[in-house]
Image (tube, rainbow, N blue to C red; front, top):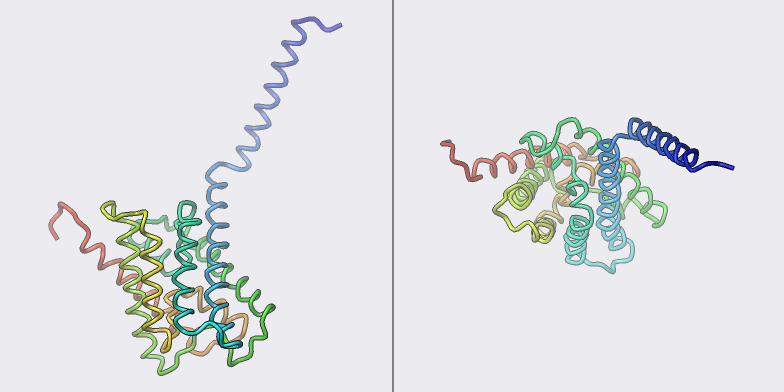
Length: 253
């Protein structure tokens, strides 16, 4: 029969073993790695639903004609707003390589995570585009990606301007302590809605390289794709730079 001392010793040994096991797991999966994985998953899911919903509205309208152009604009604005409030507190809700790179350039985001975030965003776009391609009979006429309607230069300039506005607004509501942070998702969503209204019929109003790359790869439609990579990158960096010039500081310019 075990004595009281034996029972106490067994409990202490069990606790030591448990502590050793937890320490081993912690070494294999440090908390920082778990947090990064959570952020990456949030970016994949967020980008997936932004592309699935926004591009889905474009495809459904072209195939069935039941959404209308104003409806597409509202869908883009609403889905971005919804996903910002859903995962913004986890990953920052970038969903856009141009936004991620701009944040990193102005020291609002670590450079080491830029490739991981961009990979997650492109993956989310590819998965959403594959889902739409499998669900809908997407003909070349119903392509849900972005293709310049006029010249490449016209679409390039337009993409730079609207992405400038988007990044300017994002910088204001998400990096400035004086802004009302609770309204950030609404403000960003409304900015995208307005941009799609203005630029949608001409350039498709991408503002996001991942939004254009996913559908282009899935449907093998690469016409003018460089416009939607260069334009948003240039516009986002310019928008972030402009807001940082206006940011309040005690230092002289």
